[in-house]
Length: 67
Image 1: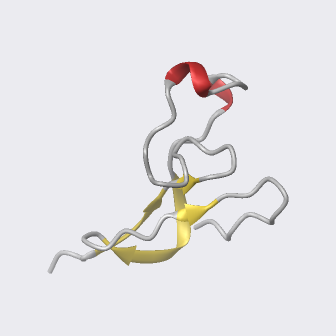
Image 2: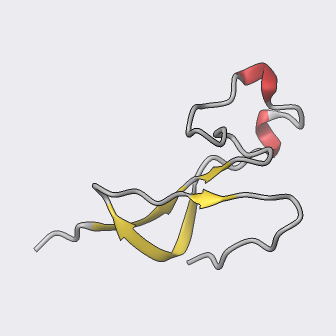
Image 3: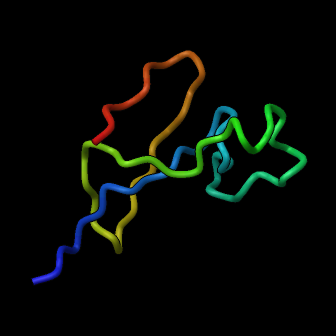
């Protein structure tokens, strides 16, 4: 039976590749360069495919656990 869970998540807000509202940042808005930018991560916590819960990013907060 196929899993309905996924560990693949993205960061949003606070300088991440996706804005606070979930919209993408334009290419020229990536100020530290695309080769220095993470698009998706393998998170420790899995979430339902149909109910994605992305990871809030803040430069001043610790990162979540990765898988």
